[in-house]
Picture 1 (cartoon, helix red, strand yellow):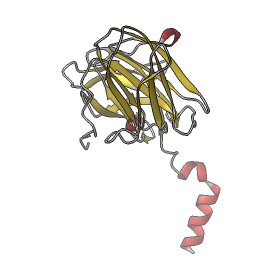
Picture 2 (cartoon, rainbow, N blue to C red):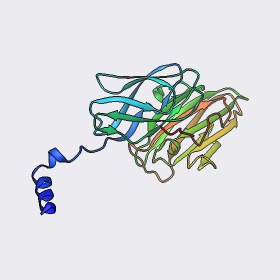
Picture 3 (cartoon, rainbow, N blue to C red):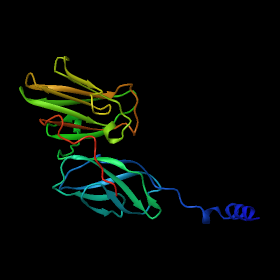
Picture 4 (tube, one colour):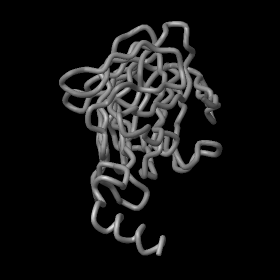
Length: 232
């Protein structure tokens, strides 16, 4: 019968007749791209071999790099916003992942030092707390903005700021409107060194508990959220 013939063909020739698995994009690094600057975007996932391009929800020049990843230069006129990317391969197009279009440069966080006017990126491991040092002048208005859940992270962030004597200056957990992310804004009471601690609310963690911590004297809501991604 016809049904029997189809069954025989599928059983005997699965590799020939069945399509390859769809590409799956799990995460990207860095988490943010700076308009007007060239960045190397690395992608992690499955079935992403031999990419032919990168779809972006924002105007950008993209080059596929022979050693892997993509060189991306976002148009310098693009405002700060949440964007999205998808990897294009010979076997199809991946799911999308969110990235931040951010005018703040990304620092290296060397020796756990935060710099006003920069952001740092990383991930939180199980049962761990990230501790950073921050030097600030009295009277400075500071915003510390943690991006995790808003970029697809599993991190449920908590941020705390302490002065040199161990007194809590500011803290945030599940700030309204941030989908579980957190943000603090405060005026520096005295010039000196401050300790910033970042952890998961339940002390969970892993590679999917990634974050971008923005530090600066900017308005708390200087990036449009939630994102508005055009179809296409």
